[in-house]
Length: 213
View 1 (spheres, rainbow, N blue to C red):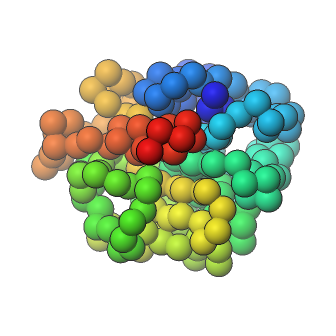
View 2 (view 1 turned 135 degrees about the horizontal axis):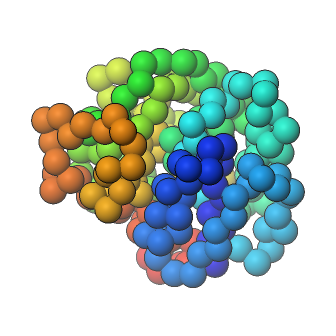
C-alpha cells in the first residue's frame, strides 16, 4: 500500500492529492497530513507520496505541520522507505535535507523539461511536456539529491537521492483534463493534455514500490 499525504492547507484546494491516490497503481491510503501532523507508522506502507500545496515550505506560520513533514522525509530516508515528492513535496524534501527554496513567479501551464541524468526510474518513458502549478522553486538543491531534469527557468526541476529510494518532481503528474477547471488561472499555452503523459511518474513509482519492475 502507498500512503498519499495531502499537504494542502486550503480545504477547497484539496483536489490534487486525491487524484494522486486515484492514479497511483495498486492500493493507496489518503490522509490530510496538515490537519493532523502525526508521524505515521511506516511499516505497513510500500511507499509514501507527498502532495503539492498552496503554502510555501519557508512559511513560519505553517511550521506546526511543515516541521513534522520534514521529519517524515528524514525517516523515509533513514528507513529506506520509497518516497515521491510532488511540487511542494519536491521542495519540502529538498528543504528537509538541506536545500533552499525561494519564491518565483506563478506558473499554471504546460512546460517542457529536459532530462539531465540518465536512468531516472521516476522519469522513465516520460514525454517532455508536463503541467505545472507553482510559484516557488528549489534554487539550491540538497547535497544528497541529484538534479535529473531542468527547464528553461529552473535547473533543479526533478531530482533523485544518491542512496535512498527518493524522487522529486516540480510538476504535477496528477493534473489531467479531469481537474483542469479547478485552478482559475490554468492556461494550456502552446501545448495540450494530448502532448503529456505526466501520469507516467505515478505509474513508475507505484511499480517500483510494489516490486512490479
